[in-house]
Length: 247
Ligand code: 5HY
Image (cartoon, rainbow, N blue to C red; front, side):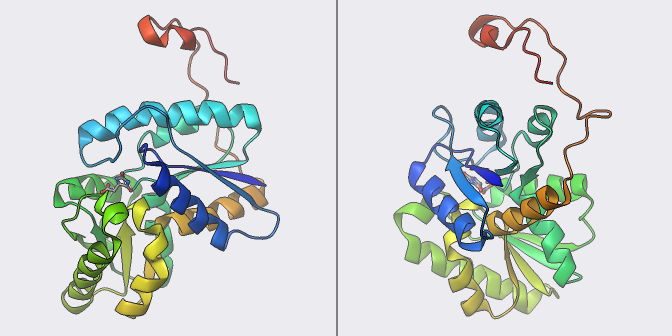
């Protein structure tokens, strides 16, 4: 099977490390490819960034459909464009936040999230509500690091993330910590060693869940709201999307 990891921001080194993390856990016979949009924010740290990035995500889905990709993973903790992406394909589309929440609740009754900036914590809170995990998450915490600090000064970022994870472990009454950024995918083992409790990382969790769905022969439903988008005219710079029948 072929799983496509989509990094919704446009920082290629982050895309590469997301791809490496996915390859590390992929089963034999699973091809992992990682892409990011050419156009969009270099990091996603606000509702505005999310909205712009979502269009790039959908472009990447369009490309993947021409390649026969079997499953897609949106490797940004805001899961930008997830439902719109699901409308575009019969392949499973999994967001890393959604994947991490599911896995965390299979190994603990309560978890906390450690993400980058506190201002994006509300996005995780909205997803917890949307996916039905609000009761399982004790707290959304932030290491207060810019997303790109994970690329520029990894050790300093690592220490801040571990410190916040340890505070969560000591204070929150939890059994697991969820890493709240796709850019933390390469830190999974080091953080787990330092924190000494289950650390759930979304990229790797999503890869294994995608393998399970493809293995089960389960496809994104085309009955109801996730059916293919209605073919229609688009204007301006999106005119090329006019009258596309995705079915
Ligand atoms: C992510 N931003 O996973 C999110 C992290 C966040 O560019 N990749 C980003 O804080 O939402």
